[in-house]
Length: 197
Image 1: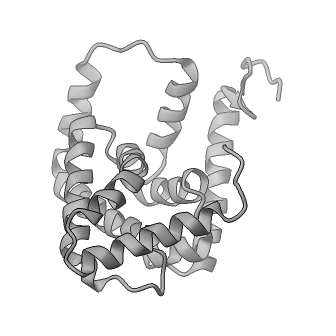
Image 2 (image 1 turned 90 degrees about the vertical axis):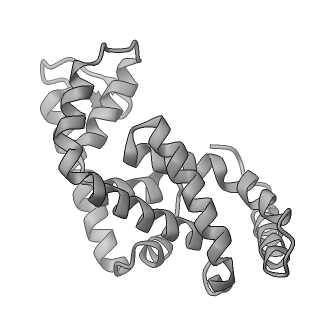
Image 3 (image 1 turned 45 degrees about the vertical axis):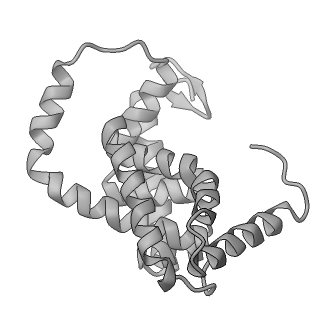
């Protein structure tokens, strides 16, 4: 994580809010700044949910199109970032619902594909993410990766922040139990299955 320069976050938010106001006023080019600011974050968020690069690219594009079309509905009561993530969350939920009947077929197809060389750490992280439900992955990514507060996640997902805290603690315990059962990762280090913890 990079150190934060005092005032840099406020400057960034103000620049985004200014770009939003310009887009609302009809300046289509100002939306480019919004895309530049959030494209990588959106891609990462969507990829961890969808686990497919092509679907992720399509989802990110669709999210930005919807954001542009609905930008007039945005108000400063929440940050633009939280508003955009809420839109992404609902879009991904809808995508997953459409895919649900094909999920087993897709998983079977993925199992048949040759295994690519990936680090053990990436394999463990990927396996742990598949152990979580889609909602748990959303909560984990928004809290741990994007570092939103529970109040912001509450606005994004439409779930009370107290409920989110409980679910976050449950999913953390679930992941810790899973890793200790397998003896794979404890505090970022690989441990042998001989009980060293």
